[in-house]
Every structure is written in C-alpha cells, then in structure tokens.
Amino acid sequence: MDTNNRNLFLTIGLSVLILTLWQIFYVNPQIEAERQAQLEQQAVEQQVQPGTESAGAGTPQTQGATASGEIPQATVSGSAPGMAGEAAGAAGDRASALSTTDRIPVDTPTLSGSINLTGARFDDLSLKNYHVTVDETSPIVDLLSPVTGPDAYFAEFGYTGVEGAPGPDAVWQVEGNAVLTPSTPVTLTYSAENGLTFSRQIAVDDSYMFTITDEIANGGAGAVAVQNYGRTTRYTKPALPPIFILHEGMIGVTGEEGLTEHTFNEIEDEGQVAPGKSTDGWLGITDKYWATALIPEQGSSFQPRYSYFTDGTPRYQADFLGDAVTINAGQSATVTNMLFAGAKKTKIIDAYEAEREIRQFELMIDWGWFHFITKPLFHLLYWLNSAIGNFGLAILVTTVIIKAFFFPLANKSYASMARMKVVQPKMAEIKERYGDDREKMQKAMMELYKKEKINPIAGCWPVLIQIPVFFALYKVLYVTIEMRHAPFFGWVQDLSAPDPTSIFNLFGLLPFDPSTVPLFGPFLMLGVWPLLMGITMFMQMQMNPPPPDPTTAMVFKWMPILFTFMLATFPAGLVIYWAWNNFLSIIQQGVIMKRNGAKIELWDNLKSMFGGGKANKPAE
Image 1 (tube, rainbow, N blue to C red):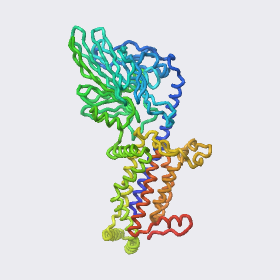
Image 2: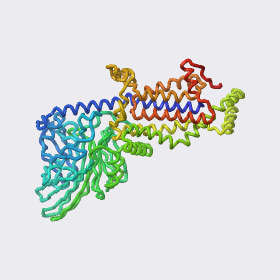
Image 3: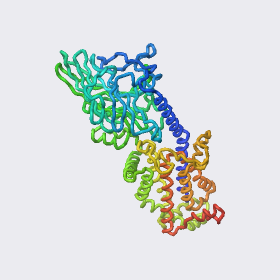
Image 4: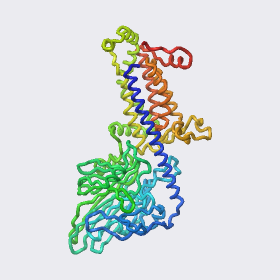
C-alpha cells in the first residue's frame, strides 16, 4: 500500500473518530434524554382524567385586537402580578387545559385533536401515525398543546388595526357541522360591535395542511382598514442541545432574503429578526421531525418576523403582519391563509410545494450542504423501499447500485493498484539503486508509473467515493422521518438507532445491560452488525501486503477493531451499509487483482496472523 493511500486512510480514520466521539458523547445521550423526557411527559398526561380542572388554568382576559397595527398578545389570568404578555400555566396538565374552553374536534387520517374557539386557535393536535417509541403501543406524538398546559405550542390567525377585530381572545361561534374532517370543513363566525362580521371556513386535507378562508363584511357606516396576522408560538425548545448537522428553530423562505434560519439559541440572543417584506413564501418553527408553518396569502404583501419574548413566560414566535385592507361600508373582502402542522414527510412536503405553489417549501427538511447527494440518495432509498417493503434491504440494493455506477472508476483504480503490486520488485530495485537520493528516486518511480500505466493515487478513489455517500446516508438516517423507527429484520427494529444487541451480554442471553456501565457503556454495545462490519473491514485490509513502516502497520492492524467499537454507536442502517459495502469491495478487488495477475495477500496474511505461515514482507 503506497504512502498516498496510507495517509488517506489515516485521515479518514481520524475524521470518523472525531465524528464517532461526537456521536457517542453528544448525540446518543441527547437522543436517550429526549426519549425519556417524552415517555415521562406522556405518562403524566395519561394519568390525568379528562374534565378535571387545572390548578393554574384560568380564563383569558379580554384584550382583543388593537388599532395600532401590531400583532396582539393575549394574557392569562392567575399570572404573577405585573406579568405582561402571554403566560403558560406550567402547573397545569394538558387534559385539564383542554377542558377549560369550548372546542371543535379534528379528525383526519393523520391528525386528531381540536381547535380552540377562543381565538380560533390551533392548540391541540396529535400525530396518529407516529408513536413516542418504536413500540406501537406507546402513546402517539403530541405536536400542539394549549397555552395553559405544559409544553404550550399553538398557531392562530387573527386581525388587528381596528377596534373590535377578532384577536387572540375573541370567542368564535360554530355554524353547522362541528367536527373538522377532510370531507367536512367547519365555519366559524364572529361579530364586532362596530358592524364588522367575520365568517371563517377551516378546511383540512388528508395530511397536515389547513386552509383558513375569511370573509370580512363591513356593515358599519364608514370604511375600515384591517390587517391580517398569523403566528405560531412555542414556549419550550427541544430538550436536547442543538446539533450542528440539524437545524431546529425559526425557519422561513420570504422576500429577497430567501431561506432564513435562526436556531432557538440564536433568536434568544437576537431577540427579534424582521426580514424585508414579502409577497410569497412561508415561515414557522421546526424541530427534527415536526414543524408548524404559516403560509400567508400568496400575492399579498406581508411583514415576516421571528421573535423571542421574555415578558410573561418566555416564548419563541414566528409571525407575519399583512398590509392593511380597506373595506368600504357595505362591502366585503376575502383573505386566505394556510397552516402546515405535522410531520416533515418528504413526499408530502414536496407535493405541497408543487401543487400549492409554496416557494421552496422543500427546505423545511434540512438536507444539509450536500443536498445534491443527500436528497437523491433518499429518493432512491424511498423508491426501493416502496418496491421491496424494507428500508434495510433498500440500503443493501442502493449500495449495489452505487458500486455499479462507479464501477468503471473503481475498476481502473483497483487495476492500477494490482499493477502496482506486480511491479513492486522493480520499485524495490529503484529504491536500492538510488538510496538516499530522493529526487532521482522519485523521478525514476514516475517514469516506471508512466511506462506501466500506473496511477499512484488511483487507490484513493474507491475510498473517496465512499466518503460522501457515507455522510449523505448518515444525514438521511438522522434527519428524515421516513427512517424513524424503520425496521430491518430480527433484532434491528429501528435503522436510525444503533444495533441494540451486545456481545458483552451474549446478545441478550445474560441479564445484563452493558449500556449502563458508566463512561464505557456506549462502547460496550457491540452488536452483531458492528462485528460484521469489523470483520469485513479487517478482511479487506488483509488483501494488501503489510505497510513497510512499523507504526503504520500497527495502526492498520488495530484500525478494524477501533472502527468496530466506534461504529457500534452509529445508526444500524449506516453500519449495515458499511459492512455490505466492504463485502462487495472484497469481491470486486479480488476479481480485479486476479485478472491483472496480482497476488491476493488475504490468505497468506490470515495464515501468518493465526500461526499458519509467514507473512509476505514488502520490499524495503
């Protein structure tokens, strides 16, 4: 193995080591903490019987919309003296908070919950198709929750700019059907003392998009100017610290700025960010798998804004304020907005962008810097999963397709490596002839390479090709909801999580959990697939003669063992990919070396290692 290849492998090894340490001591504890927090919260909510009163819940004070053209904020009675803005009743529970107001039930194939008639607020939505854990008997995921309960998170649309316009505390009335389904929209009405009447139709599709259509009639004596606003407000941020490969927080695509992203921590420091006005786009709040997004009426001018409020209970908010719409006496106007609230499923997000012409809505999913690799790779995996019915098998097939696509390049690389092995005696003669004269030795080497049609760095390409695919697959497994709780076979029931088995408890035969060992626990979760990956990596490296440098030879000897322990903490899907790729590479390299007359060192190296023979030593 030449110096260029050795240095490349060492660089890659160091990079993977850094990524692994980050995975072990940063990502994995965060994932576990998040899972435990979700389970504890769901357990508390299940113990509460609907209809009980919340200790901290109160009736919203009448505040209404203002004539100042600002987005109004509601208050909650029972707040501390002098507390301004909205306050979440942290002492309350979700079920009790839901029981304090009149509501319209929501029932779709993907969502369950209700809409609060106070403010016509979306503050009770749960995702039917997603559970807290891989166990399908675990509770489903709650997305939106009322302001007087824990983890408050809601969205609403209202009006400001004129007295009497319906704001966050307006109580709407229901007309006709009182259950919102994809086939049965609901109609709400609100009448102000100044003669304004608002008729709101709320419709929902089979997925996660709500359409809110308001008809505003002016029954007063003079013209009025109203401004439409929308906001999505969240009182808590994800329990886990932010991760650099994933954006969580404020997000939107508006105006000339295009994509705008501010993490929760960034918006805390900045307080408020107001991009330029826009006539299209969207804005909202996102976390790893779920999001809410406001889509103002396209073609109408609005001012987007991202804020962190500290009055009352601290909260994060993405909102917009539309330009004033003047309605003459006896006239009416119509305003239409949309709200996305649900899982960031790629097929659904892309369909919304295309069918509803929402500008760059696909950026709701964080595909990362290498999106030109990551997204096509995801679509390939998704298509194969649709055909095969298993994401794990899709990963195996994808690996074969990738290797077939790059076969011509890999074939040349392995062939060049094989020819280099054949001319090793000539290389040894050159080294002996020129001794310490490195300049003449390098010149002679290059002439030999040219004569034998050898590219000395050709061996780097198969490895370089694998690097972007490796990181793209890591991104796909980590950020896409389609991979969440995706099973393979047997013990691997979540490809986005590490292999749950461990050799240190005989793969579950012993009543011992190695992961509970302080500090070293993550390293002891050495499952079946990490072991297979380590074995295939070891065999692939043994196909080459040992490096002449003793230190490098030592590093390469221990590298498969080190990688085995390191990758045990990575998503099982990634380890399966690496093991399968190693196996295919062994076959490919062996065939090409045999075709080019180069000796395959694998068996001699294995015999030497296990005392069955002497290793072939490279020429000095």
